[in-house]
Each structure stands twice: as C-alpha cells, then as structure tokens.
Image (cartoon, rainbow, N blue to C red; front, top):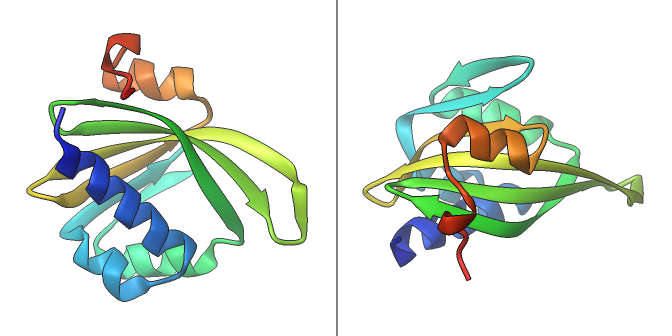
Length: 124
C-alpha cells in the first residue's frame, strides 16, 4: 500500500465533489477510462462531461488498496433529496499519482470481486 495512491484518490474525489475540473483533469491521465453498468467513456473531455452532469454529492467510506488498485465504498445523495442515500463503490487504477481508470460498481462486494481485492487489503 502506498499513501500516494490513497491521497490521489481522495484529492480526485474532492475535486469531483467540488466541480474543480482543472484539478480533476490534472489528477487524471489523458486517456482516463470511466465505466459503469450503462457504458464507458475515455479521455478528459468525457471526464468533464460526466463530472458536469453529476447531480449528487458522494462521500467515501472504507478503502481497499493493492498494487495501484484502490476500491472505495461510496455513499451518494442528491441535492434535492439529501436523506436518500445510495450505496455503491468505485474502483480506481492509479499510476504515477494519476487516476488512469475509475469504474462504478453497484456494491462494495461487486467492486472487490471485480478487482480481486479482499478484506486483507482494507486500509486501517
């Protein structure tokens, strides 16, 4: 585990929540891959469109890390209904302090299974 991978993910997530597109791009590789159940996209322009279209605020929970892969538990709430919280997880690939991919999974269990991370990789 490296502190820089976790720090990169936390800074990336903060930039996403505050709509700081310049910092988000600076923390992302030029060919960043974004994915979820409904499709995938690649590159900074796709990242900007995706980030600008978000209408939720997210909070990260437990984090798991191994060999450049970071899985973060996520709780999301919409501005118009902050009491309705949705659980999910994000799986990041971090290389040289830049996010090269981020995939949203419906659950923490699904993200851990997809990345082959386990409870042994939990950051304490």
